[in-house]
Image (cartoon, rainbow, N blue to C red; front, side, top):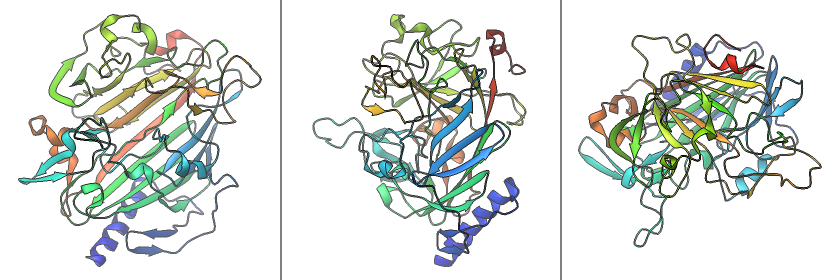
Length: 427
């Protein structure tokens, strides 16, 4: 089994290389699975972060959770903005107990698992719960983002690092958090011409197991520096393929139903772009993100007509701030898109030194409630417990399966006009 694990690890790395041509000067490094690869001397900076750059874009990453920690873009005024949430120093990622999943890769199964259990080939598996505790279930009644020690709670290994790309790996052993079988995974991030691309690959080396990954990045395209508001409710969102969503109960567990996002309804972001906060005074939005919650924590389905090329079929999402003029178009091969409007933030998470307004006495340097937007490319949530959806071949993987693959491209542009929101050719 050790030999097979090593071979699969190298096969996964080869798959990454096929999808992303090797860059001159790139050298693989570290230990992946049970395969050792000769290394190079790329080291993190004094803050423990690894830096990569492209044209008009720069980013920092940390091994903890294979997380993106900073993403720098110039706005329409030429001011550099760090537009994602994170911490100033890599060491604090391991110390922070709030753990907002800042920029990490949740795994081995992103989002929620109903009753912390699932069935594969007639056998029921129980994974560790970590959300919604109640009497009799002090640790929770469901599992979120892979459990209490999911992948974004762990240090990954840097296996490749160039001026414009970085690759992390993790080996998740059989039985960890209750999941069956070993999984070896690789995540490569790269920057191009105002683009951030990533590819995630995972291989089940021993047994059939659920796999669904994502990037859990917190966005504020103003870099929390808008003098008029510290919130992201002024951001406009467009989901051109998002006419349906997964219906959920009061703790955000899918009910099995698929709901229509009727034009003009609070969940309609497909018929026309609208601000995140456009419907916050509408009573229909109360409970939309769980019991007593106003806002969004919603899995929108991405309904594209087959066949399609995900790189050419237009973005599945567009987020834009009129204040900074920064716009991001999200392209992906995934068929769902989770939107979270940061209703759970309460001002206890600090901004980085690269963010916010400096020297303004009446505004705390924190992420306030609704101060960010999380956008997660992924498959249909908890489909492992909804076999009638027909998603099991996209979420259950074994040694004989093709690798799990997720791809996404975030294309940034500067847009001074509201007209530019209306179509994929704008910006």
